[in-house]
Image (cartoon, rainbow, N blue to C red; front, side, top):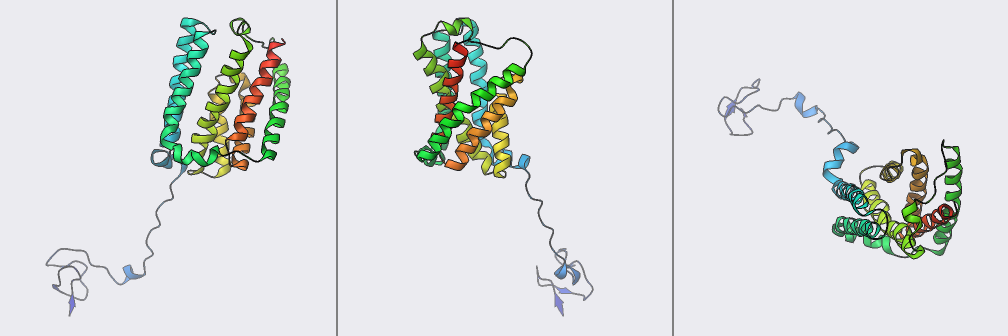
Length: 248
């Protein structure tokens, strides 16, 4: 006699439900039915699960941009206002990156000399491409704003080259790219990171150029497996741009 696999009660051969416990019984066809495959998670499905570090970092950068705008409005883009904005950037990036310090630690090792040479070469070539792009844009070519033009070169180098070169690379090529590499294919993660990097510069006309710079910095990070090369390239690029703008 057939018996229920749940309660052990007697069953008719054709029964689909146990009259004693009410459980549905597996039939002959169920034994050969292929179980439904779960739908693979898409990129947007992974954001709430794995994207926390990148979302936290982007939120911190957004808050820094809003606060920096207020500081520049209150104090002007000179002296205290510029230093306060740098301090906010370093603080925001540092606090957001701290929980990811163990994941970032391997990226802080020095890269090979060849990647440093590639970083310097890119830092020298990219501003030339940027100059060509600016010449194609309508309007007058930009130069240093008057408040910035009066600042000491050492302060400009610290605020516009060193701080962005270190902090922005930890943020984008460190936390954001590292997080996205665990959520999407490397090429997709690379493109998204470059797009976010270009967007936070808040210069729509220069978005294609900043996107190109982001692609180069991301390529250095992925290929060298180090943040050292993109940090050097970023700081060197900004230094050359600063020199070019100072001469206008």
